[in-house]
Image (spheres, rainbow, N blue to C red):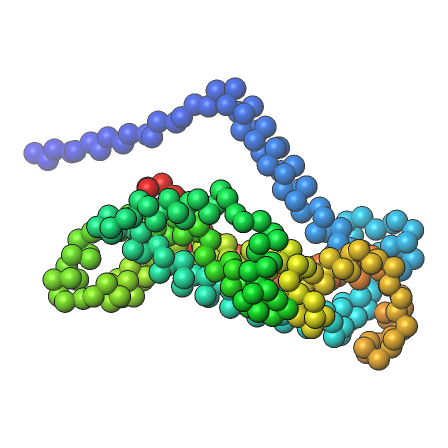
Length: 307
């Protein structure tokens, strides 16, 4: 006699959402949609102005979409020697400052993450003290003058090599790593430098990527240091160039030697030149985010929970 086994299937229980929760979710979607729109609108407006003709921009007919599309504005911006020089200066400062800052910050954070360090609390207190108090602008300028760093590229990233906030994030991340890894490495005869380079650093790529993004954005967007310390036009970074471009909006385009297609450029306005310059200056740092996005949240959360 064959017995048939009846298979009982249990349906997953559906979670009922109340009317109040539905209203809350709807308001959340509306709120974040408005925030996203207010963030995206300036970029769309700049893009439309940079691609629109002179008559459309001056008449105020440009809002979100370009009118009478022309590419002479970008042709002028990319062929401007001052813009390209400032662009390369910003790239140099950002690359060198991010690399040196990340190395120096990691070197400072590693010993402070070890409880066996003598005077550890005192050193941490001294670092935190610098976050709250500083000597001021005039003593900083006198110090840079004594060090003969005025009007050099070094002055734009050497004073900002170590950010205490970034150092504390990396320190907390180092503290979250298992102590057994270091103990087993020491039993094999590894030194502190070997442990840092071969064990700690490979395991800390998420927080390093996050801090590298912090440094890169900070160096790329900084214009105040160059405004104070830089005098030579060839050493001015891109953000200072944009600041001066926005202030001096009454630009005349009479020198055709820097423009490959002068007829196309004559169909544009100072507002369009400003918009195109801002977009070209913003694009490089925006392209960095997709590559570091997967590390960003993980690096910040793990590095900020413990400590």
